[in-house]
Length: 174
Image (cartoon, rainbow, N blue to C red; front, side, top):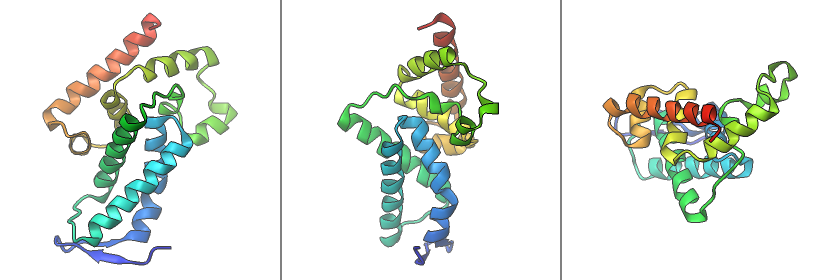
């Protein structure tokens, strides 16, 4: 367990152990929804926390740890995705959580529909996948703006267009 605490220049005390415990699962699910691959998602989470810890070690200022973690995870995903040229088909996880998958009572999406969703999500651009994932994680527009490096005034438009694009692709069958 990490016991090191930091007080950054904003006079905010950050307990790294608590930060990890509080956000590791959320960050993992976000990364899993982006990548569609459990091992890849775990790597993203690990790399994200390492970057944050190093940043804090150098005296970096963190005003919103959650937002910074998700922004870091998204950037790592984009970097790793570019380098490896990975295109994942298993993006069904965008719509359901691990607990929903294991609960037979929540099996509300049929296999056929799931195949269509997987195929169409895999065709979305990285930013479109990411904004839908962030929205599913209940991030504010301000946080989405910071994570994706787009203007706050553009978040709603990008989100709406991404969802509309996905709906149209699913409706038209590709």
